[in-house]
Length: 67
Image (cartoon, rainbow, N blue to C red; front, side, top):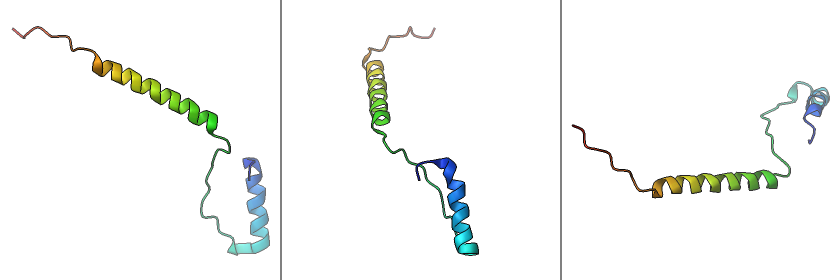
């Protein structure tokens, strides 16, 4: 089912057809075409990895000894 707003009517129709024998064991949602979302997530992940690598690669600045 691609339109969530139609789910209630479909469940009602099943319940009317079967009566008390109808069971709904769970609902799951998926995205039909997720390629642009995956691309954006990969770009963000690479940007985050570059930032973390840059922070780790910077030389540590020495601190003055405590007096």
